[in-house]
Amino acid sequence: MKGQIEDLLERGIEAAQAGEDERARDLLIHVIELDERNEDAWLWLSFVIERTADRIVCLENILTINPNDEDAAEELDRLLRERSIEVGTPTLPRLEKSEIGASAVCSQCGYRNPTWVYLCDRCGADLRPVDVRVALSSGVRPRTGSIFSLLGAWSGMLLFNPLLAFMPELALASWARSLAALLLAALFITLWRLGLTVASSEFDVARSFFEGVGPSALSALIAALLVLGWTALISLPLALVTWVTARLVGGQRDFKTHAHLVVVMLSGWTVIMALLASFILLILHWLGFEDRLLIGVFFIRYDGDVLAIPVILMSLAGVIWLKQAVQTAHHLSGIRAALTTVLALALGLGGLLAYAALFESDLSLRWSLSHHQPHLFYGWRMLHLM
Image 1 (cartoon, rainbow, N blue to C red):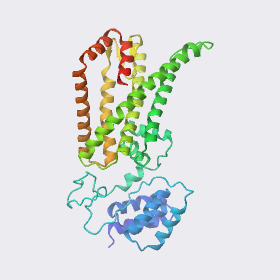
Image 2 (image 1 turned 180 degrees about the vertical axis):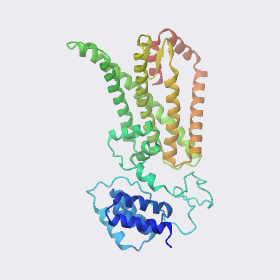
Image 3 (image 1 turned 45 degrees about the horizontal axis):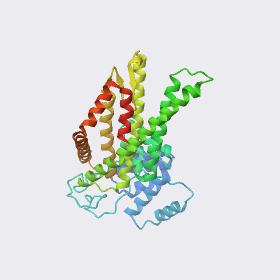
Image 4 (image 1 turned 90 degrees about the vertical axis):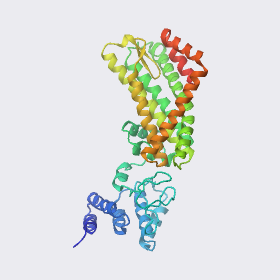
């Protein structure tokens, strides 16, 4: 009597031979989930998988299992020679070369763990077999190096999905792309604020640019530059603190990659907060409260009081996104990534309290401005952060 793996493999091969690629992929992935070193399953999966990068991984895994497979080696060489084809980033996991009984050797840091653990004791990496189905579904469209592909990262943040937000950025991390993330956020906020201003105002056609669009564009640009300066100012210290704390709990990622994910997170945070503030403003406008509102760069004031709800929501979201970025960068467990985030925020809070203690008179000035001249308060506040 055939076992479950043999039955699934036979059905997968039959589906592949019949041209039912989607059904074949599903059956063969199921086989790999049960036995990740099944050579036949990887072979037939290489025939029905769509992306070239994943075909290369299938063939590499076959050679990892059986280095003497000449057909797989020839096909792999052929694919690697086709430099005219954009291979992209693979979504399938590569197998590690390991001996029998060495399944608890961490693929991230090489530490040999007890066979009963599922997280590496040194770096916190997950030792359990990779979920091939999740890997495929999370990366069907690999991210390109275009600056506008950062919109995909911010969309993943909105969904609180680190596989979409941060995982594709690991292969694209660079200082140039980090700067591009900041510039794109500034450009987006400028155009967004300008669009809202134009859409909510009735401009005279003859004088619209000089008395309406022009000043609004300048105001939006200044606000975006303030946001850009604030984000750039905080990104490197935050990246450095979180990187050091991540290394203390077992992280292995280099600083450049870690810092890039932090910058992507912060730039996305500013963009999403601008959208949230506009959404809240729209609701209050519909309710007839627009005459009692004062809009700052990040905050909304109503009758002299800062509306705390958007600030609280975005603060909590920022903590979650920072934890996801750190966890993705260093392949840490959820607990260790959360610990890293809490330690970094605690250090940051300590710095703010120290600042408050050293510059008490300065804070008194800010309090006075916030109560008596709120317009000056917002301009002073953002310039002070610079």
